[in-house]
Length: 267
Image (cartoon, rainbow, N blue to C red; front, side, top):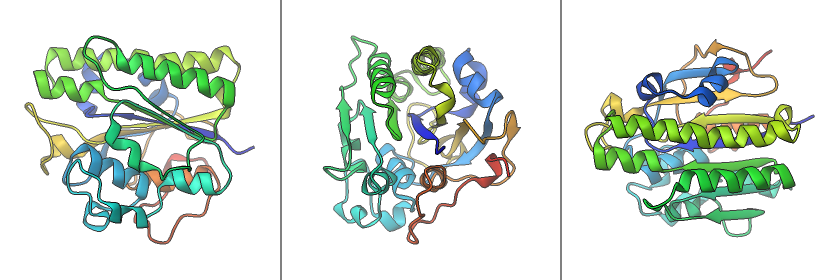
């Protein structure tokens, strides 16, 4: 039976910060899945260009999104969300940054839920719990769950600061809420998790071609995925869309640069 996928994007999460933070839920995903701490994002390492490359499978030089403003020309490259929707699969998107709305064309999502980040509430946790409730009830084929607070903390307090590491620990709890909901419903084995960051950061910023900005974690966990396996082949952020398409048994568009990360899979 074809797996269902939950794509979790941890905005601004550096892999070396994961090593410092207490993250039992994310640890469980990589320890029982396939992972790399050396995946590469794209330049400019800003959130909208990197997400566009992640979902549309091509570099910023091709899709034309050079900052955090959407370029309509990017729509000529199909998003993996659009690809799934056209194939009749159920898709959903849960996020807290409005600029991400253009990752899927109007009408291609079965559900779109956006709650703006708010420093007076735990928005990541609220968005994750909304996603968990929907996933258990509707069992969509592809769900995108965006977690944005760690990036905000990096800008305010600095990447690798104590508040930044604590933010990652809180984010881990949000991921744990989704996993727990699936386990309680007896659905965990039906879903594959793909967790990654869009970019890293240094000091109080990102956007450069520095390794601290470009190096990201990339973790795959689910049926047919190698367990406790450090991925040996290079992974770039554009490979994310192609890997999702492969797992959903969808044809990979010829215009995509990314390739499925087959090294993470059995056989």
